[in-house]
Image (cartoon, rainbow, N blue to C red; front, side, top):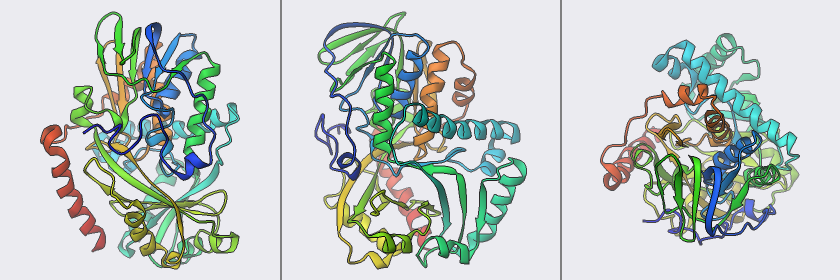
Length: 433
């Protein structure tokens, strides 16, 4: 199965709310002939655009190859939630790596938010940035753990932007009987991810990056000079950065073994009006809940409900995405039963077994970063900068991240999806208990 084409038309954005409310840069021309550069970056999402931008700003000649359009993949299709830390919570990281390294990983995650916000400000990117993300507990038994977690983060990490929400407070913020407690992180933000990606592309282009669209890498050759091939071009470069995430299509063996593509889905309703919208989310925060298969949602700038939910573990999207997501949406907000859905789309993200990103030196001059496990708005942006810094001989953070153990998925490419489907069925059942 070809992940790039099985659900999408080559060179076209999905029919999403994001694509309908953003103006793309370019279009950029297709790569043709012999091209030379200091660095070739493959992938036009947050990772590739950030890496290309930061490399160009350090004076390097950079070519970026995108198989479809910039922001085409998960970077332009996600829930738009930008939070710090890592995908794995700090107490778990402390148990796995010890407090000292857990704090380093925390700082990298926090810096990823500051980096993205700084780029938005510096590039004057109009992406509807708004503060506040709620983590909502769908079981009352999680309340004590959440309260302890908030206290731990405030005491050990000095995080004074996180606060505990009891049963009254969570229902004051979110108009759903499904949630019993939670936490509010005012250091986290939410945004229009495709507009953010487009803004990064414009910044990269202004910094001198040569961006090529509809220029799919078909392979690359190792060596002192890396040769990156497309159907119409060969790019010769001293360094190569692979920012492929869920669309890697097994082109690099290590990523194929350790980074699993999965599909996730989002719907956007018709405009709800100010009063109805505020009855659902009072203060315009974004929300993600405690289910293993996470529900995440927020209001758009024009007062629609944007709701993400449901995952599938084969390559094809379901025939009726709207029906797939409407079910979990109505479990949270039954008051939306008669509300029209105007947009429904799917996208492919990438997970690792550890749920921590996979940083890997394919060769001394070839770097790969992927596997953001649903935490990519900030961390993919940061990963691009870290890769750029490593090429500029500042490899500290790349080495820290690449030192994280990431086990291979069992079964290889042929069996990993069926095995994952069995495991996820179990976790979905556990969510209901």
